[in-house]
Length: 470
Ligand code: KG4
Ligand code: ZN
Image (tube, rainbow, N blue to C red; front, side, top):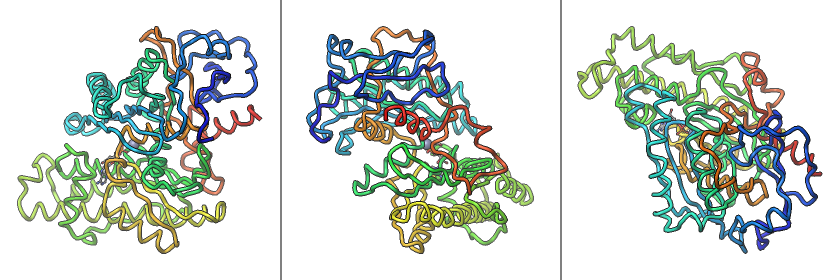
């Protein structure tokens, strides 16, 4: 596989209509000519990747300029990754061998501090304002131009539609003008797979805990695109609990709430406030942080802590009281992770006894206390912990570029969009998009994923496409 040309002229590409709920995330390289589907003439909806129901034939490709540099080795791939799913505008250029040529992140920390959360419309405007500069910076720092790219990878979900759209539009614009293939990326898969860039010997299958502002996932990664969801949150994610606790304690939110709590918690006594661990009676791998948030709020109210007074102006006694709450919250929030992780590793071992690693990623994984506690868990289970460096745990373009590379190598990508694609097109974005299929034992009665989902999971899409190919 290593020395093949990645965009052979004889390849054909195929994508199911976006009218169908079963649309594929990626066009798959096919050896046989695709069957033409009937009744697929929708023109206003576009995949972030390929206009609906278009099948490129060999002759289409042979008469157009080669959409991809002839790459003699996968190591030579050059992929631009674009991430705009939440409140960070990020771009990066990564080489096929994992070398990071550039990484640029523009955060909306000021907006976050102002509103205490992400306001979709404001976030969209903030992305739109900086996206061109962020992408240009990433290309400049990598010392390349768009024409040098092998492909453009972009997050298509889950996330805020308005925000995703900004990144997808930019990606398609570049890909259309410079005739580059596009890879649509699942944000949570990217959080997990970036660990394989960091640790090249990390092979499938492995366990992963993904902890961010919007997600709490325990997933068994069996292969690329093949994920089993062992647990998820039935309400809030841990990052949301960190952010709210920080806001209620009057902390400086400019670096987001998590780092502020981590720092203040170092001053406090983690056993001073008695919070109860969530979901003790549920012997599964799901999470809940809504109840812990309420416990924290009540503790803050009963101690008469005034969030209007910033921590920097608090009296010594007041600061100590806030630090005790921060430390106690963090202890219990992370204990909940530890308990669920232990069980999830046991379940995963039943399915894939050969797993050796637990990957912990997502913004909250940059927390040193979280890492230390989870390291103890994996040691007890005879596994190794893999945590990407903090800059690759929080949202970034590298993880998107790398995930693009992983799928591109497998032939999962879409050919270049038309150069004249109108800007007002409705893209196939996936704001609620499960990563894997739920493990039967882990199904939560409190929140059925089936009801919450809009799109089929990435894994079920890939499985369906593989079946079609067979
Ligand atoms: O993955 P991420 O950057 O964005 C999402 O996909 O949500 O995660 C952001 C979350 C925020 O809730 C932030 O407070 C949290 O990660 N976070 C942390 C730390 N750094 C970021 N939480 C705890 N400790 C940290 N050091
Ligand atoms: Zn994230």
